[in-house]
Length: 286
Ligand SMILES: [Zn+2]
Image 1 (cartoon, rainbow, N blue to C red):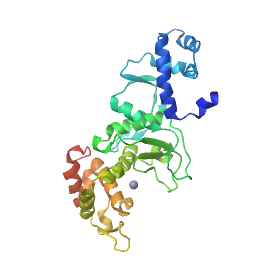
Image 2 (spheres, protein in one colour; image 1 turned 135 degrees about the vertical axis):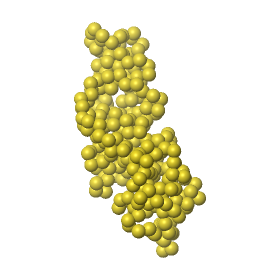
Image 3 (cartoon, rainbow, N blue to C red; image 1 turned 90 degrees about the vertical axis):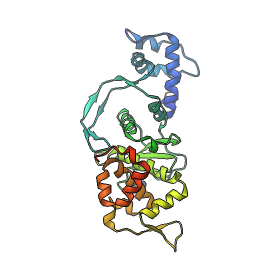
Image 4 (cartoon, rainbow, N blue to C red; image 1 turned 180 degrees about the vertical axis):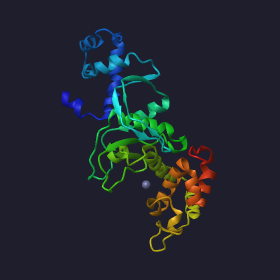
């Protein structure tokens, strides 16, 4: 039985957390003196036999009101928010955290394991409390037009088969590799990039054509459905976006949101297109 708990996915643990919260609430136990001890002795059945394992967390969480959730203590390494500002390292004590309905939606999408149809060569990893909170903080920075609630899951995996790749997407899922949480990457921008791939995929064909046109991508007559770069190398913010219109679009959005001046300087036509479509949401330096 213990093994079941250990190998369970986080999604599984989340569902269990609900079951156990219910079990704990039903007992009438309150946070405080000997709570954990009394909780361990509460009767269990088939549906909640694993709940005594969570007594420490349940007793701590009992201090939180219904708009909050309990966050276990963790060490937070320094990291950069979307526009590059550094949040310093700190030890975060266990605490009740205000949790909006939007937070709850995304918490339920932070899944263990991997998307159902994923390349077999990549290994799964585990979420830490620090990483979950980092992703939630990043999501709060990301504008709503990118955060499609139909995204099925955000998964944690070790390394990409593509060297130095922090994240990947199959349009319905996002995979975050170890690198996404390292100081080499900006997690907010990494998530924005992957979400932009989905946004582009969902645009009407006329809009996709319009963007490709603005970005000077020309369909390859030899390989229909693929596109040739029509603008000079100096007209891209980094090497990645020269690969195809999808990368151009994704990096275009990230730069537009976080450093619009740079996009305006480097790719003025792409900047104009972004401003016409998403103009009111840019949060970078004007
Ligand atoms: Zn990409």
